[in-house]
Image (cartoon, rainbow, N blue to C red; front, side, top):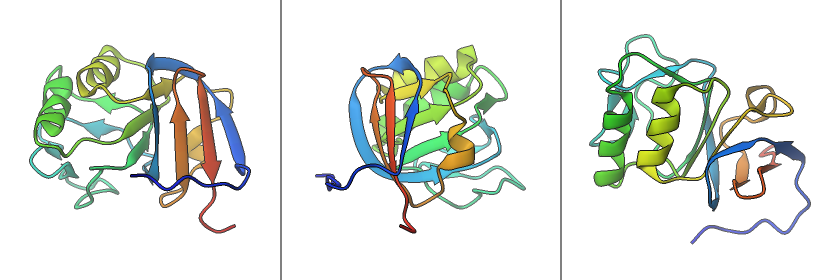
Length: 146
């Protein structure tokens, strides 16, 4: 069960719902787009793409904050496999809405937002505590360093 932070959030970001729901967890942030087919090991939820800043890191059970999807239409299939292997992210925040990213969110069935009032990549860091309330279109952020 996720720990609920009783402090006021340090940052509130508003966005548009892709998939509804509420989730809270640790952020894993990358400034680079993520490739599905050949870029992710769905058995581990791990980024395996060569030269990617998250190479070797797992997004399983974390809030994935990233610019968007890249590569083939197999992206959503690879991310669907992470759900089937229980290695999916808890939720997703992405800036660039493509059919790959949107379909990936739908097959993952995790709370997902896009089209933000402020860029989450400029305000959320890996390790920050993040609560996504996609039904309200709201992201609450508690900075790890505060």
